[in-house]
Amino acid sequence: MTMSSDNKDRDPLDALFAQAREAAPLPDGDFMARLVAEAERLQPAPKSHAPATRPEQKTGLIARFAALLGGAAAVAGLGTAAMAGLVIGYVQPDSLVTLTDGFGLISTGESLDLLPSFDTLLTEE
Amino acid sequence: MPRDDLAILSDEALLVLYANGDPVAARLLTQRLAPRVFAYAMRVLGDRAEAEDITQEGLLRLWRIAPDWRQGEAQVTTWLYRVATNLATDRLRARKRRQADTLDDVPEPGDDRPDVVTGMIEADRMAALQAALASLPDRQRQAVVLRHIEGMTNPEIAQILEIGVEAVESLTARGKRALSALLSGKKEELGYDDVI
Image (cartoon, rainbow over all chains, first blue to last red; front, side, top):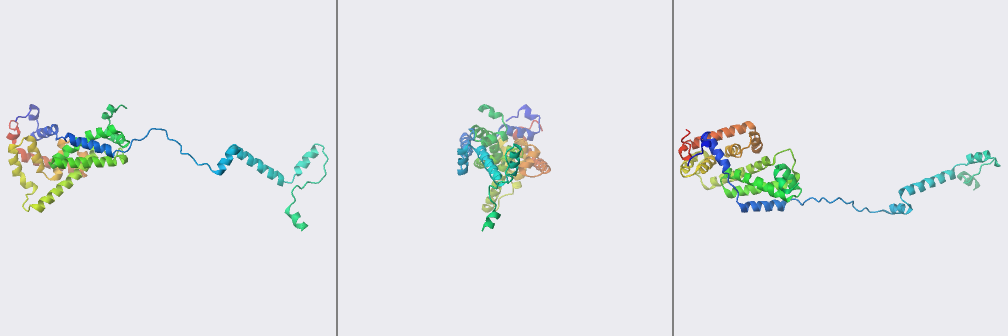
């Protein structure tokens, strides 16, 4: 057994290491096939690239009622109108009387109480 | 990316693809890593069946950790060599326990040098090297194999053996000296008679 001229020029142990690197023990084909099969068996499932779909949302009774009236904006408008009606109903309409005077209409000089107060109701008892 | 181009990717990138379910990555990583771990285990243990067990177990652990692999913290090869080293160390300890249980007069590792030298007469150089490696203490053998045969750097070996770089240098230096002493009387058989 003779060494190559390349190996002769270096430290004998280093030459032996170099030879060992070139003659690495290899696993046999069956074993490698088993390893590949095991790697595939343990592999996580491929991630899907399909676009994510929004989960179907359950619609509540209020949401369905709002949709029936034309959506949230329509409901908000209705609510505002209702609040405005209540305010106008409660407030003493003095300013309206003043306004009608300005147009030359006859004023009774008395305010109109559209909604009797609770005090009045109590005194009547 | 075409399938064939995956071969140029790093081990870490392939491991990410593996975790994402790419079957080509599973095959490429196995073909790339298994021979290295197997060769290392063979050098350290000198037994094909045990080297196969360690290779299989090491890769099994890699596949299991793949979804949680933190990129940038460690190289896949370094991590795998560390697992293989720990598994091999367990096997070597168990082997010594069995020897101690069955043979009261089993020689210490340093005492079997004459047997190694005698065996080298009929063996080729690789078998002689393997026999000499087998006579080294376990940690010295692991360090020498990683440094001089597997081609790892000292910092990489320090990570694998979980010791400091200086300890690695000491282990490899002592291991190499011991190998030289073991093989020095057999230069002629090894084909080094022209050099010395």
